[in-house]
Amino acid sequence: MDTQTNTVDEALIREQIRDFLQQNFLYDGDVARIGDDESLLELGIVDSTGVLELVLFAEETYGFTVEADDLLPENFDSISSLSGYVVRRLSQQ
Image 1 (tube, rainbow, N blue to C red):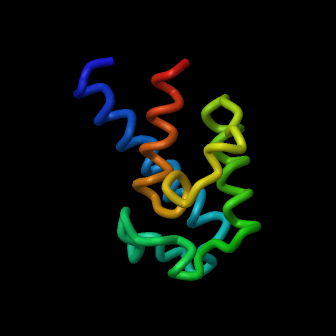
Image 2: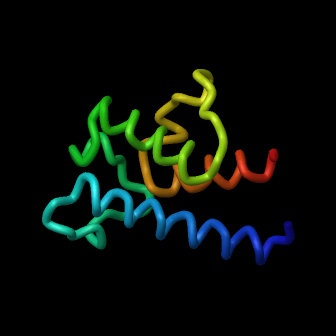
Image 3: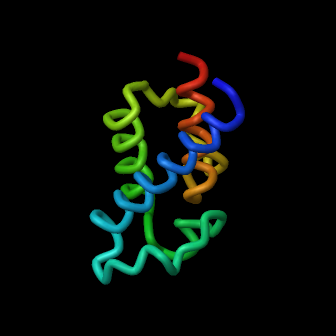
């Protein structure tokens, strides 16, 4: 993939993550208030069960298995970290 394709793909992935968060965690629908780099855990948007839902979302949506070693805050604690993780995993396939 070239750099421009990666940017477009990551932008699409971020939008899909935002849609998932809005439908499953933000009952007021105000996903715009969340910055891409803000901690979803610290904001109280997701808890440990919510992280598992994010893992299932990533696996089902993007077609890969999240390995136990990848279950780190660096991969699932923000929109940016999750989209970056998904892009890395997809580029490995």
